[in-house]
Image 1 (spheres, rainbow, N blue to C red):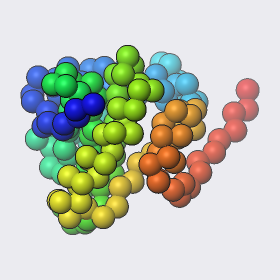
Image 2: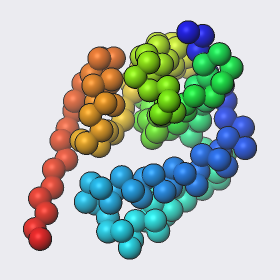
Image 3: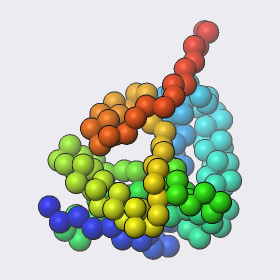
Image 4: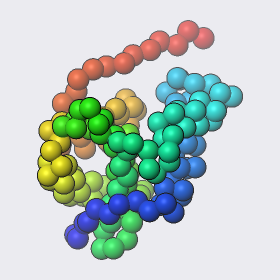
Length: 155
């Protein structure tokens, strides 16, 4: 398995953004945070806030995950200019047809070493509770649970 990390191009970013906004809206509906009527607008608002300057937004980095020169995933993180040794991962994905084949597990050491070379010491992220596959992967990679967010819906 030959995996490499490449910087996003503008075309990569443009292709990613529309789907990402829709996916984030859908997951927030599923998790009870937003109603179906408000979800797309709320998702768009959050992406607009985070990525004021698109692909060139300060502190944000987008990488393609490539397997044998085919783009099979992505890794988007934010590195606060005032706290360069920590990053927050906003999104990481492996294309469905490549999931559960060791791509994510094999990619993480490459990303970890690249971040380490950049001076990063801590990786933080959020995982929705119903994303059990991602939770298993992150635990296997050595991530530790740091908090729980809970809600109760009264119908």
